[in-house]
Length: 320
Image (cartoon, rainbow, N blue to C red; front, side):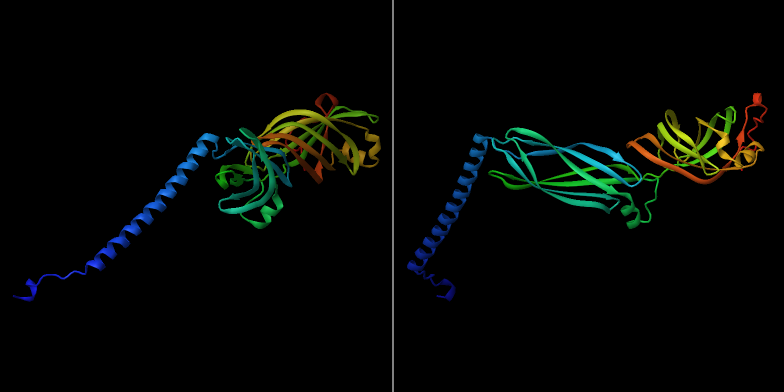
């Protein structure tokens, strides 16, 4: 009989021992799986019975309560809803504003409050953007431009059953880097002339250097001729300043020519008169209202009479 025909000799004790060990491993694995399933089942039952759930968050609005040439104050409203029967604390709020991958500002707000049980709360995140910091950091960001932004925020909350959770949010949009308009006194036209009191109209030239329209609502100003203040005023004036365009507006002013001394004769003879003007424009923009300063120093203009007063009303040589 060949070796292949020999019967296989099996150690009965070893085989039984192997079977017992396999059974133990199977029982052990089955027990652990059962415990896991039991714990998960209990957790789901507790969650369903007590009503625990994950809170939600959503950016509802972004306000710009103040914006000028120096900075923009931004407030981000985030609505957080708590479906749980107990209050949940806001542990931290991490935020970041970037533009085309460039970080503009980031920050952390610790211990931001508590969301009431079965309630909702609008959390306000105040942020201040300093435009000089942005322009000094990124040369390619020019004054007067509109840049895209991406707002990212992580709300870290501590929820029973779930533990500590992070609620990430993201919002995109556009924001301006505002630039003050240029102002010039194109000409001063008499309405009524006397040495004691002269009523005139300032023909102002406003150049909007921004990539967005400005809706002029009001302006305040003070004017100096030959280094003598001829006064100023605050008035409501509606006009649309087209983006990267020039707009002319007329504003009235009253002054006393005799206060100018020898400079008066230069004005009467039609010579160029030095002037300065400073003021502010109250404007509406697509990004909210702004108060923009305007100024011009060392300019030269002419005083011209109306035709009925013997003056030349041509516009060909209004400015030197």
